[in-house]
Image 1 (cartoon, rainbow, N blue to C red):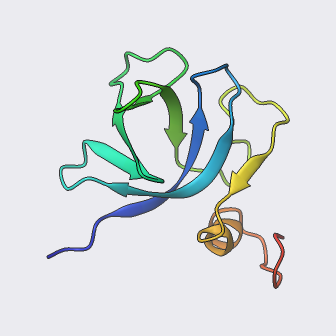
Image 2: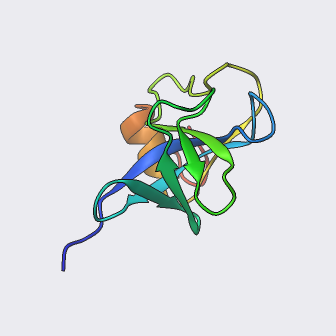
Length: 109
């Protein structure tokens, strides 16, 4: 049995507004690669049919912007000053491998 493919991604909830709650976390791709899972939720691509979003949650239909995180940290599709939460299990890899900063014990760089 093969290990599921995972990737650290930026996930922003677009169901309420253009700048919704956002986080950096590890998603798991389905075996076919047609859907992704995060935090017990399953997302499918809108295949270019979305307005300000590129995925929808299969259970609720809520729209999300999901993409690879940017090195400069400017991940929000429309900017803004709302915080982006980084999940603890990916924090070290995010700050060092993606953002290119040196890790400091117990804190973000």
